[in-house]
Amino acid sequence: MTSEKGMLHSKKISVLIPIFNVQDYLEQCLDSVLAQSLQPYEVLLVYEQSEDQSLSICEIFARKYGHFKVIRQKTKGLSASRNTALDHATGDYVVFLDSDDFVSENMLAVMCNKAVDSDADIVKCGIQLYFNDSRIEKMKGIADHELVLRNKTEFFQALFSHKFNPSVCNAIYRRSLFSDLRFVEGKMMEDNFITPYLLLKSDKIVTIPDGLYYYRQRPGSTMHAFSDKHLDLIESNNQLKEILIQNGFFERFCEKYYAWSGFQYMITIKNAAKHSSYFKFRKYIYRFEKLVPDSQFQKVLEAKLSSSENAEMSQEQIESMHKTRKILTKFKKNNTIFWLKTKYGKWRKER
Image (cartoon, rainbow, N blue to C red; front, side, top):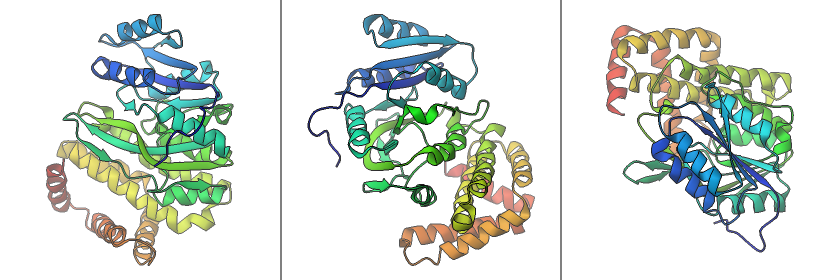
């Protein structure tokens, strides 16, 4: 386990929190920041016009605590709020926190100490899924031991091996990474669009397994519904391919990229079924097929087969690869209404 060791570093940390219709969870979020053993230099609350009492809560914290600052703006979405916060941030490091989530009391101390001691541009921690019944489950996507990544090859290797997830919330970043970089506005999967550029701008990244970030699971959130916007995940996947090609990494990671893409495809297809009517599900499938050319889908299937034969993978990973490939193969070869209805009904039951 990573812990706070020795004296806390005096680096300035800016905590950036977009605010929109979250009155039921906002106080727990802000209280978790106040409870930090290493207090941030500033907490920037970017408020977009809401229909609840979120603004009142923000103003109470800002009046009581001088380092909490409220920034108002028109409703433009999460990416725009994060960009506004970045425009105002003055810390050496920035931390993104979603306003319905919360963090462990030692998160900033552990992450900042690790960043300074290792001279890392990014430090990422594990994520705990927090359910409304207070149940907690560790989220996959971060290595179960500390990783020190020292070059771009290792960065993308960790991404494609599911040891480094694209989320920006479970991390601390050197603010200079964002000197000429901002979130793409109007996209649902904004983290997936910006993360490849953050990897390219970094020289050193450290991941720690400690689950210091608590990601609230609530049915009403945007991640537990489905719309056309969720197909942005496939667009970000296609963008990643172009970035790899432009920067000379695609040949090295070609097979891993396509195997990883299959994982993204499965997430998209299953979530469309879980959270949509069958009529809308069919509509999403049609758009999905336009975003994924047949030639690319075939390469995904080939990569899944090759990856599932990798002796270095665990039995659980191998079985998952086989299962994903089997479903995707049937999806592409037999994409009939009957088959889709069968899978649609099954996936709906898995909610």
